[in-house]
Amino acid sequence: MQIERLTVNIGAEVSGIHLRDAVRDDALFAELKAQLLKHRVLFFRDQDMDRFSRADHVALASRFGPLEGHPVLGCHPDYPGLAQIYRSEEKNPYENNWHTDALWRPKPPMGAVLRCIECPEVGGDTIWVNMVEAYQRLPDEVKRKIDRLRASSSIEHSFGAAMDEEKRRALGREHPPVEHPVVRTHPETGEKVLYVASFTTHFLNYHTPDNVRFGIDKTPGASQLLHYLQSQATIPEYQVRFKWRPNSVAIWDNRSTQHYAVMDYWPAPRKMERAGIVGDVPY
Image 1 (cartoon, rainbow, N blue to C red):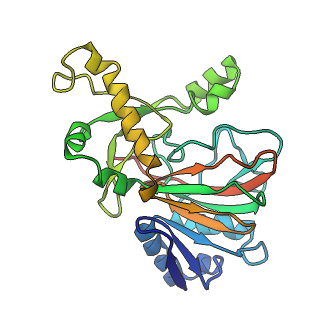
Image 2 (spheres, rainbow, N blue to C red; image 1 turned 135 degrees about the vertical axis):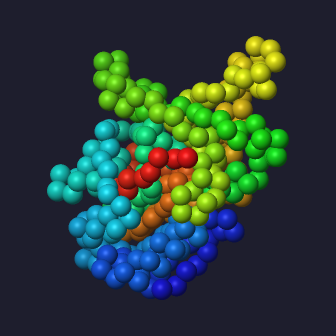
């Protein structure tokens, strides 16, 4: 197995292995997991269906933990937990934003295994960003201000916004807003992670005497701080950009990263299959 770092802060391309072998080989899987914690996102080429079937895809992701479905994307009929993200008929505006997958869940995913089935000749890249580095590079005064802040995240204002009113409200009832720390601790590495993204709507405990002198500190003060924190994901020095080819695979740690699927390819098709892995309650 060869590891090639792609940037200083995040991402590595792995070659010399077949991913299906990691389903059965405990030592190989342990090494992959160690490299994932180190590089945060790993990329693999030429993992075609003969070498890495859908059953292998699900089995590999399941080694990290139980798989979860998605209330909007749906899953492959024969492989529960394998979401089919097929973009071929209409332009979808919800990929091209910085997000941590399913931040609107009480237990957001630990990570995911994503395979490219079909992609455009040009465009359709995905960008990942290291949110540990984003936190570490914040000014000290900002770190102090956000140290104990908590924020609300919601699926209704994102995926739900494209639905009619009845369906949007039903989605919101099924998946009500959740509360997470603005700075979470990675459960395996102990690192501090900046943990707000496009699903984050507002702070829940910002309006204290330490933060608010006058009304302008509360509104728009809190929303300006949230926007500033969300914007940290856009800094190129924290990012890696990956160009897909059919049968390329990415595995990422959803706890310490965000990603952005670049919507620059429509009306060309882009078909991806993702196995999302159940996570823990952020703290």
